Image 1: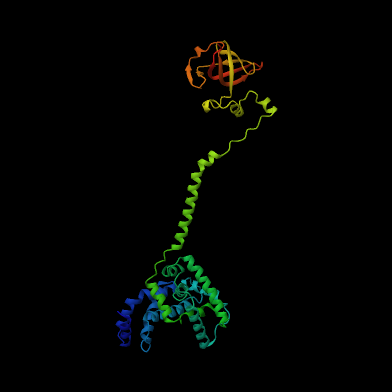
Image 2 (image 1 turned 120 degrees about the horizontal axis):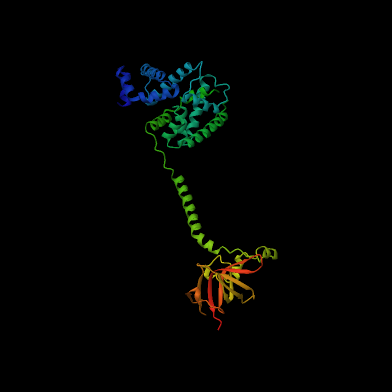
Length: 186
Length: 193
C-alpha cells in the first residue's frame, strides 16, 4: 500500500493502518532497532512502541515521508531503551560502537544548553552533512544515523570496507574541526 | 559535548538526506567495478611479462657472449706440483683435441714408433727427444690421417716401427722418472719412408 493511503488510515483512526505499517516497514524498523539494541526481544518491544507512537502522533502530524518518520520514531525509542538498559552495564551494539566513533568528534565536555543551542547544533550538522561528497554523506548517515555496521554501510554504498573506514575517519576529523569553527565546544 | 548529543542531533537531519540513505539501504548500489585498479594491475602484468620475455630471449645470447675465463700461465711452483697433471692450458696450446671429441685427454705427443712391447710400444718424442712408453688397451683407437685431415680407422696391428704417430693420451711418471703415455687414441700422420 502506498504511504499516503497508510497515513490516511491513521487519520481515519482505522487500526488497519498498523497492520499495513507492519507489513511494509517491520523489517526496516527492526533493523534500525536491532542496530541500537542488539537484542531480539528489545527490538520487538521497540518496534511495537513505534506503532503505538505512530498511532498517537497521526493525527495531528502528517509526515512527508512515512518511512523516515517511522524510522526516526524507532531510532528515538530504541535509543531511550538502550540508555535505560545500559544504565548499569554497557551493551555491545552497532549503536554503542558508533557512539564510540562519534566520541572522536567531541571532547565529552559541556553539551549545548537549552533547546535553542541544540537546534543550532542540528542546523550546523545539517550544513556539514550537506557539504560532504555523495559517498561520504551516505556513508556518514548510514553509519551514524542508521547505525549500520561498517561492512553493511560500505556494501550498500558500493565501496570496499577499507575505503569506507578511511572515509569515515576523515569525515569525523572534518566534523570536529567544523564544530569548533562553528563555536561549539566539541 | 557528549557523543550521545551528537547522535541525538543526527536524528534531526533533513528528511531528504535520511530518505536518500534509506532508499539506498533498500536498494544497495552495486559496488563499482574498480576499473583503475584492474588497469593498473594489467599494466604491471604486461610490463613484468615484457621484462620476462626480454630476459628469456637474451639469455642464450648472453651465455654465448660470456667471455671464457682468462687462463693464467702456470707459475714454476704450479708446474712442479702439477707436472704430471693435464691442464686446460695444455689443451689450448695443442689447439684442442679433435674438435673436442677427446676433451679431457691431456696431451698430444708426436712420437716415432721404435719397438713394440706386450702392452704397447716405445717411441721417441720427436719434439723433445724423450723416450716414451705408450701403453694401449682395448679402448685405444688407431687411425691414419692424410694431409687433408681425412681419417681412416685402421687396426693396431697396422702400426709398424718407424711410423710417426700422434698419440693422444695421459702422461704418467713413475718414481724412476721414466714416462709412459696411456693412450686413448693413436693417429698415424706419416710413415718413415
